[in-house]
Amino acid sequence: MQPPRFNVLGVGVSALSLDSATAQVLAARGQLHVGYICVCTVHGISEARRDESLRRIFNDSYLTTPDGMPLVWLGRYHSHRDITRVYGPDLLLKVCDEGRTTGLRHYFYGGKPGVAEELSRALLARFPGLNIVGTFTPPFRELTDEEFVAWQKEIAACRPDIIWVGLGTPKQERFMAYYVSQLDCGLMIGVGAAFDFHSGRVRQAPRWMQRSGLEWLFRLFQEPRRLAYRYLVYNPLFVLRTIAQLTGLRSYPLKSAAD
Image (cartoon, rainbow, N blue to C red; front, side, top):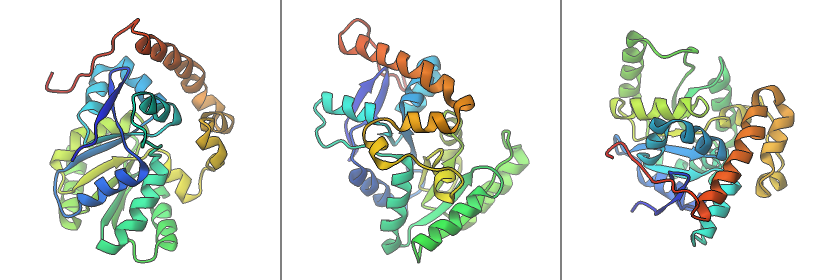
């Protein structure tokens, strides 16, 4: 059963906890073409405000999880009392851990050269018995038809339950929405920076900063040139738009590909 969604600036965010999201993922084991999961942040919502096609991708997902404390707070405002942050890196670890008992099959797609392999080694060391069936580091461009056909055959041969995608928002959401129906897998899950975090290439914010909604500040100090616009422009815009939505000054309707 799919969880309810609440409207955040036209994006339907799934009212989930980390435990319930993990249960949804594990329940899809052995199935094909279940769909794709977006772990949604304020950045993702802001990108979706600029691009209706991306907004529809979020709304057509199997799940769009609240990966960010502002979305958790909004979920609780909308009376979803059991909602918690479903942080991409945490979801990856929890699914890897709990999926070992059923032999859940994992595949890692994305990252810079060598990252997917480093991630696999780190996860295997952390979770003995983890079933990783493959990795792929894509070129920094769209796949050619020949490259996609070769990769499609590889996926058909190893039949992963989950393809974890680490391309960053909005690239990974577009990638998943386009390819999920063409690949013999169960779920595609976009987890962005989780590849860099768990391979050890990038430090994560302390837990207290994550819980208090200050992770963005930690990341801004780490990568100011890349993230300044995202956090110093998008975040204030998100707050202003959210106030307008909550007070009824502006309506943000939900739209899917069928609309």
